[in-house]
Image (cartoon, rainbow, N blue to C red):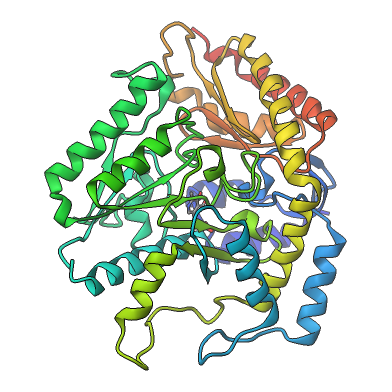
Length: 452
Ligand SMILES: Cc1ncc(COP(=O)(O)O)c(C=O)c1O
């Protein structure tokens, strides 16, 4: 049962991440109780289709007993082992080797973190260390995309380009820069795929020219811009950005915290365009959210340069108590077995069906665009399909959609800028996709008044 005392305790003591605080206090928390497959049950017994896989992380879906058993076994045998002092644990070592085997290019070295934000932070520190070690210590500037999200650590939040992560936090810092998002639906200067790609390349070149290549360290991007509204760049965009980075002598960092582990079909989004970044960040789907963990993949060339840089016997000064936590690593190994045992194939197959079915919503009067890459998608709401006008702010589209969705038995991300974000568990079946679409249509029907 929904417990009033839980709500009161939450209101009084639980400082929630990324919520409007006073609105949350007023509304009260919604407590989730259990999950199975793609469904969640809340504390009042309502069953909900989780169209967002928790926070785009429960890729394998809920309730996998083999994952629970692996965590239990590891906890009983050895709940903790550090990676410091030359120590390690079997699952962390096996996982590093497995990830190196799966990774694109020569990303053969894996540094474990607790999630995505500290993965991005780790990359920033490694990039600095790398250039200082090479005697190129003027290379300090980082470039990212507008509308990008790279976590909310003190450094990473400045690479993120969403206003709520900057305002009153004194961000971005003077070494953090942003160039325009490709955002095909609302790109005023370019329309065809080729034009959008050329625009991205030109913007990156112009920014590096302004900063000086000798002062620019790296460019970071998501393959699909998740928190910025699930913006899908044209095929070939990321590869063109990678080529430009190589031409300009700056590092290319791909943030696959969302797109990793089957979210867009293949194990890594990099596979779509054969990308070989210098660093790759992952988290979320790595453990399917069953335990916290992130991983930074480092190219062999960069690893070797970092390893050679410190004087003999002097440690590389970066790490976390829980880097390579054995329980999280055991969970990740088990989750990867699920991915390799059929879920990646399912994601590719059902992802195509999902995109096709989602497009049937384009006939809805308030739907301006549907965009998808595998099981990662968005529906953009407009008040006028011709002009792409945004609904009036006082229509409170996001708030109403979230409430109506919940009442219709579906959870999705209702972005503040009138975009519905979707990322269901990749174990989803075609029948469950049909149910998701039916519930989404019913939900869209509740905001017909935004039209016109
Ligand atoms: C692309 C991307 N990078 C980094 C992060 C930060 O990850 P975390 O919330 O695990 O710190 C996220 C989280 O949503 C993300 O989407």
